Amino acid sequence: MSATRAGRGYWLYLAPSAVLILAVIVVPFGMNVAASFTRWSGVGAPRWIGLDNYARLLRDERFWQSFQHNVALIVAMAIVPTLLGLVLAAALFTLRGRRLPSVLRAAYYLPQVLPVAVAGVVWGWLLNPSYGPLGARNWLGDPDYALATVMAIMVWFQLGYPVVIFMAGLQRVDPALYEAAALDGASWWRRFWHVTVPQIRPEIFVVLLTCTIAALKVFGPIYVLTRGGPGNATMVPSYFSYLNFFERLNVGYGSAIATVLAVVILLVTVAFLRVQERA
Image (cartoon, rainbow, N blue to C red; front, side, top):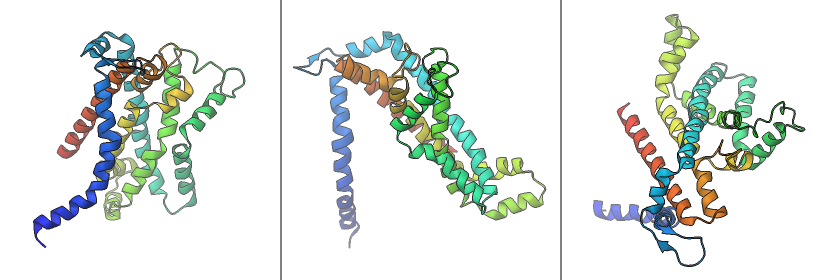
């Protein structure tokens, strides 16, 4: 079979995925971009206004404030879970073969299995200032504490994902490296820093990238826990877009927010991949 005929065979296998991507991602995104250049309530004919929605975004303090909250959530959902997950995975891997590490790994991963709505309702009950066992203060209702409280919940929610990925990555590390380091008198911390971290660097990049994207587009936890409040204390771009799109019926403006958020996620992804290639 010639190379040309073999290539045509590959395209046949790729066709279903290409059609799915086109129908679920490309076409809706194109429609969203088109709507961002209009003033539209969702009913009737949209009116073309060019770049007015984007000019409005540049002057909208709530929009920029929502991105600042996104940065805080990247810390809570990507950086902190990755660092804690590295240490916990290395510690659990050191104790492999015993029952306790398997139980702890399942416990860390349990929040990832829970639906976001269920986890949010449980935390809302725990932190309720009237009857919650942890409601010594109105954690989610006080603008000074709401974002920090959401960040703490998201660390709990995200931690299991890097632990599982890193433990899977550690399975492929050559045990001889640890044995050689131990014979040289390296402490656990030095083995962790000079063997574990370099050996599972690809997994670290994957976890950081996927968790950062998850933080940028976070919606469910904010919707369930605070709905962007109190005030704008926990507002994020995805919820700000939803608010304009569905509640205020500013479909064009909500589409512009969603478009900017999609472009930011795309740029962050490209930057991560470039850094990973050079590392």
